[in-house]
Structure formats: structure tokens, C-alpha cells
Amino acid sequence: MFNSNINIMKKGFGLILIMCLLGIATMFQGCKKATVPELTTTEVTQVTLNSAVSGGTITSDGGEDITEKGVCWSTSTSPTIADSRTSDGAGSANFTSNIVGLAEGTPYYVRAYATNSVGTAYGNEVTFTTSQVTGAVLTTTEASSITPTSAIAGGNVTDAGGGTISARGICWSTAQNPTTDDDKTTNGNGTGIFTSNLSGLDNGTVYYYRAYATNSFGTTYGAEYHFITPVADIDGNVYQTVKIGSQVWMAENLKTTKYNDDSPIPNVTDSEEWMGLTTAAYCWANNDEATYKPLYGALYNWYAVEAGNLCPTGWHVPTDADFIALEMSLGMSEVDASGTEWRGTDEGKQLKSTTGWPEGQNGTNTSGFSAPPSGYRYYGDGLTKGLGLICYFWSSTSIDDALAAYRRLDADNDAVYRAGTHKQAGKSIRCVKD
Image 1 (cartoon, rainbow, N blue to C red):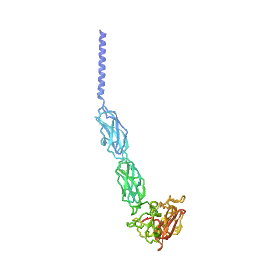
Image 2 (cartoon, rainbow, N blue to C red):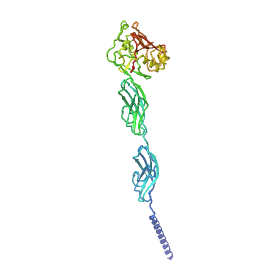
Image 3 (cartoon, rainbow, N blue to C red):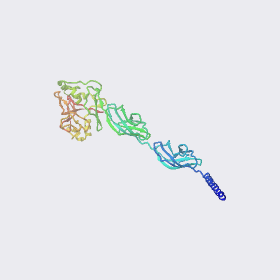
Image 4 (cartoon, rainbow, N blue to C red):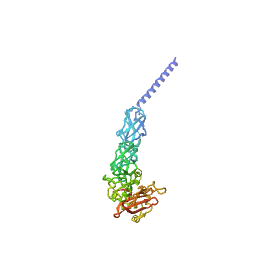
């Protein structure tokens, strides 16, 4: 009986002891102090010109509920919630933050933050720099459909440089390196291919052009190209042109049947009549317009030249001095250029076309002059001679009442012949720009 009571007492004491220990533990737990949260900052990704993405990972709420969390940033170190910040809700879950309203090309410092009743804590600091707009990348399309007053060009903007293309087009000038301060087209915006119509051009003029594209960085340019506009006569014939030295020449023989005031030039086909002329006339080689007009142009006597308005307005039949300047620009010495008969070295070869002459006797046409073997009409019998073998060009320089100066190129000679001949002869004409 006594022992039973003792056992009951031991069991009761044990229960009391356990209850006391539990109470002490509960008391200590109730006395544990709350702290600010603990967290880390997520590395910055998806950086653009004015935005980025970061966030945070919360490792402890500090014993209290988190009421606000996000990231804060500044251009100075150790940003706080007094600086720019996101607000990404409450709770202790990890979070992602969209950082917006940034300036391009700028370094920023970022920290995640979390707030509970104790205060605000910050994660580690990370840094990044926003992207920056650079110049656009683009190419220039070579010109086509070139007329005396217009042309078509264009470009392709392949990279906007990280920005937005606000303007694009072609700019052009008679000087190299044209800019948007010169003549230009405006062909919309954005990247991609565009086509430009260049207008208001002058005939026989060298133009330099290039594509441009503008973004917030500024205006950048594609490769520069150039072309020379052709010239049209009063009949509507269009002639390619070439710049040789400081001169601009037709690169084709004249074909007009009218003066530039629209008055007609007599077409004389009869040989006897041609021989006796002291007035203006023209003809086609062998009187065959269909065959020889496209190949060689027309043949004119010097009296047609004498009128002074045979070439298109703004152009003229070259003087003897104009021919000398041409020859010297191709490398002929001044002494040779001032001489007569065959002069120089290969200047004739530079002037002759690369086709149409006898085999092995074509020119190099490095000048771009493209002289064909157009023959001539002989003053002595009024017949066409020398087709495919020779060409003559009148100058506007009269030697005396009977003779005028000319230039001659032969199939079997690389030099240039200078002399005078009878004004009744029929010869080709090349015009030079005033």
C-alpha cells in the first residue's frame, strides 16, 4: 500500500516536471526577439536601353510577416527605398522586379529590399549598365534608270543600332561626301530596303550619293557611289557622258537632225550636191539611217558646226584647244599636243571603243570616250569611206576660209592625228559641256 502511493507520487511528480519544462520552453519562445528580414539580390538580366530585370530571394522573414518587398536602384552606390524602387507585394516568396524608366548607356546600382515590422533590410548590391544606341548600319544601292534630270537609287538599313530609325533616304551632291544638309530624299523610317527617286538633276553632271539613316545617336551613311547624268538633244536622242580630266564630254557621236533652236539641218544625200556645199548639211553613212545612226551617229559638214548651236543647250562643239586639253589629260605632253599629224603614244587607244574596230585593233577605252570607227564623207567625191577603220571629229576652230581643224583615230595607230581639212567633208561630232 505504501509502495503504491510512492509510485503514484513519482508519476505525478514526473508529469509536473514535464509540464514545467514545457512551460519554460514556451516562455523562452515567447521571449525570442524578431529581426529584419534576410535576402539576396538577383543578378540583373534583360538589359535594354531603358529597362532591366532583377529581383530577390528571401532567406528569412526575421520572425515577422514581410509587408513589402522589391528592388531599389540609383546611379550611386548603396541605393535605398528612398531612391527609385519597385513594389512587388508582401510575403516571403522569391520575387522578380521589372526596372524601368532608365537612361541609356548609364551605370546603375541595385539592391533587393524587404520590410517587416522591425524595419527594412537590403540584399547584396549588383551593378549593370543600360544599353546605348549606336549608329545605324546600312548599305547604298547603286543608281539605275539615270536620265538627264533624274535617277533611282536607294538603300537597306540592316541594323537600327539599338534605337529607332526616324528618317532614311538618299543624299546627293556634286561634291564628295554628301550629307543630309545637301539634296536628299525622305523614304520613311525603320529598317529594311527602300527606293529613292532623285530628281532636279542637271545633264552631264557628276553626282555623288549615299544612303543615310537617322536614330537618336545621329545620322550615319552607307557607301558613297557616283554617276554622271546623260544629255538629250532637241530630237530627244539621249547620250551617255563621261568626265575626262576637268571636262565633261558626250560618250557617243551626235545624232541630231536639228539645231538646238529646233530649226532643221538639211539632210543631203546626193554626192554631187554634197561636194559643192558651202552651207550646213548632215547625212548618215552610206545614207543608211537604220543601220548607221545607232552605231555611228550622223556625219556633218563644218558649215553645220559654224552655226554655233548644233549641240544641246549648255554644250558646244569642241575647239582645237578643247581637244588639246583632252589629249593632255590622257597623258600627252604639251609639246606633242601642240604639234600636228600623229602625236602622243597611246592616247588614241585610250579614246577608241573596245569593240567595232578590226580584230586586234580595238581600243582600251580607259578614257570612257568610246570612239567608234564611224568613217567619214569625203569632200572630193561625196562618198562614205573608212567605215570600221577610221573616225574623224570636227573641231569648231576654223583655219582659213577653206579648212578647219579636226582629230582622227585609225584602227592601226594608237596615237591621235591633228590637222585641217576641207569644210565640205562630213565628220562626226562630239560635244563638250560649256
